[in-house]
Amino acid sequence: MLRCMFLIITILFGLSCNLNSNEIKSDEAIILQFEVFNNDSMLALLTNENGISKISIHTFYSEEKKTIYTSSEEDEILSIDISPDNRSILFISTPKGNQVVSTLFQIDLSSGSIKLFEFIDYLATKALFTEDPNLIILLMAKEINNYSPLGSELPHKFDLYSFSSIDSKLKKITNLNAFYITKVCIENRILYFNISFEGPYTINLESSQQNINSNPSLIAGKEDKSCGQLNVFLNKLYYTNVGSTFLYELDLNTKVTKNILQLNYQISNIRSIQNNKEIMFLKFDQKNISIFNLETKKMRTLALNYF
Image (cartoon, rainbow, N blue to C red):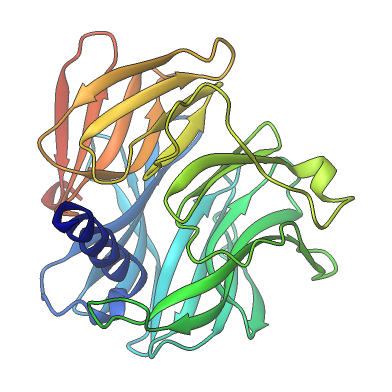
């Protein structure tokens, strides 16, 4: 019972740090999220320092970098995503103070032009591009409440939505009203996500566009339901279990699972580069990005001061 309670408190503490960056008191910069451009040449980095969020683009292994957006002291940035054609970046901004309202930004990296879409009575915590440049997937919460033994107010009542940037039409994909959905990704028009630390669950994006109440299914080949971090690349699912320091790879074709890495710390923000030859992830201290080569089994680190 004590172990279970410790695990729950650890999870809730992690969520509190991830979803309430305005509560960060340290004046040291931390990495909230990173994304890799499709040609593996650049990183988009979301950082926070002194309560100010910043999005910047960095060229791998060079000093070339460019800040494309800095938040005000009243707002915070919750997530970023890069378009499949590398031409634009999505991010979500929300006022500090736990308000159920959010704004979706889409920045054209060539022209610098910005599109804004505001959502009232919805807190979007994640935005994802799809293969259709005009269709965006949103993870949205309808409530912020204090259910945590740590006293932190966190988003709840989650569902997935599709959003058209042409006519601003918002369509509900799921009818889950979930306590937590913290991770979601997309590949080949299939959404992968966890529900209250279980999963991964999947839902077909095309069928969900025709049926609002599409039921997600638990992915085949994964024996246990525990699911922390997850991402999918080239039909390989990379994931961690809640509270675990193991990184697993599940082949979605053969349904074979492998333990590819054991660490002495927890990780987040799993990404793949070099056609799945290397896995990148963010260390728990949110100051270092590690790169693990699946062939040589060697690890190297990009420290925050590198950026």
